[in-house]
Length: 324
Length: 258
Image (tube, rainbow over all chains, first blue to last red):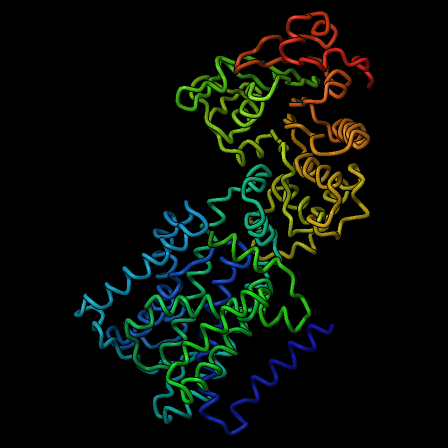
């Protein structure tokens, strides 16, 4: 009951933000919705299955570029079609990459995903005629539920209909993910994270379920990327650079990967903190680096761990197990 | 025969961990594999359960060739195993760990959007196995917080939760106190009867346990079968006892106790 009251209150607050008269911070929330969706998927892979991907920006970029391609090249502007296409494209790409990556674990899995992420980054840079190279591609305003809102000023569109549309997508993505992690499928993923040899002995087809988790996480990242497209208006290869993947991992650790809502809190804090620090301090990455070190050393369970009083060693052990 | 191995060999370079091992376990049998360290006992279990691929030879489960088949496939075909070192899911609760096996048995793993908490059948069957292994009071406990004896029981219980026809136990009482050993074995045998497990193959060092519970004993030495006999017949074979059991052959408590 307490959880539902908290969730309801948070949702009401999120819905009220556009009415508070802070358009700048409201637009930042759009980035949060996009990253939060992607992180739900990343945490299925990391927090639940025990596989740490250092190349997940690939799928975020794939979603964003799908939006750009569909709207500016093919003239398909339906946001629902864009989201579905982004998911399908991501799943197809992840099916191939994942089939190779999930054969490896720990640092080898991380390095392989990083390598594929960098390959995609190079592809976006070099295939200029397809991707616009370093200039990237424009994202045209999408239709929301079939409604053409091109007559609205951009700011009004973003902090109005698009804001609520993004909230709805994140809410649905959260609901579906909650169902997944509390299902028999979710328990099997946790079993794989805890001990793959034992899981296999109990009938879990470890490699196949790692692959499924990889596909789902890719689909989520692509939906996040597709949501991000209209907000930034122009997608470029920087979105898929390895530092972006690093940011995704940082957000997950910051909020607490051991919690379902941890990565969401991490994304929120990261986005607002990054924005604040960037305006105050040119070396904002220095602050983030120090934060990450302190986090791993003293609060391995992340911010939610601190808030709920869990500061055990499990988080640090899981991080160590995933990368060593 | 429930489980058969024909001329199994497993080599690591020049070293032959198993060298032409042929054995069979019939329905209703409790068979123990004994031998000194390095005899190839754990390798044998690992080959039979698909964790290792044999260099040569075939393995059959109820007549079906299962050589090289992965452990998860074998688990679904009705063969389960437990490990020499306690192998659990440390971060999951006792109930969750048993549910992992029950989900496998009831083929619920494809249920992506069904709440596990609402699946009463899975919970009921996991609870039932917990009761057999005296773990029903600890269903909500995280596995890593259990005492060592309970961890061992949970490891074995999770294998039993698959309701296999054949189970292979790699030192089911290792790492626990002498007193706990007999408790674990009594629980294990009772649970096997209740669940309907048809054949048990165990690797065990403790000769009280081996001679107390086995219908047949297979003695391994340097990767080969030295003897395959009833406990009484094996005790009468002084040469094998000296070679395989060593000092322990003079243990006064040898003899069937269960």
